[in-house]
Image 1 (tube, rainbow, N blue to C red):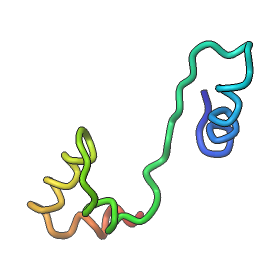
Image 2 (image 1 turned 45 degrees about the horizontal axis):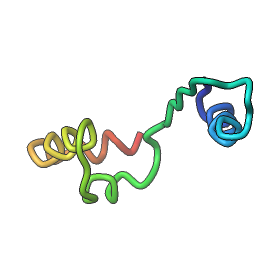
Image 3 (image 1 turned 60 degrees about the horizontal axis):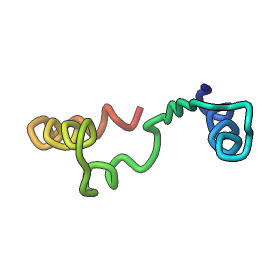
Image 4 (image 1 turned 180 degrees about the vertical axis):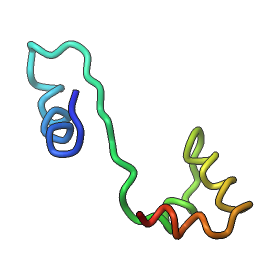
Length: 64
């Protein structure tokens, strides 16, 4: 389990390291928010898109 760099290194190690049985990836949501609000998605991503359609200023907040 790790966040940011540690999570990325862990994600690369999980398939090949025999000592690791379970793995948990904590992926940050930073990135291209305008694209994230447009791409087809389900779950929490879909909920964010619905919220953004109802609240036009959400993209400004997501940029932080």
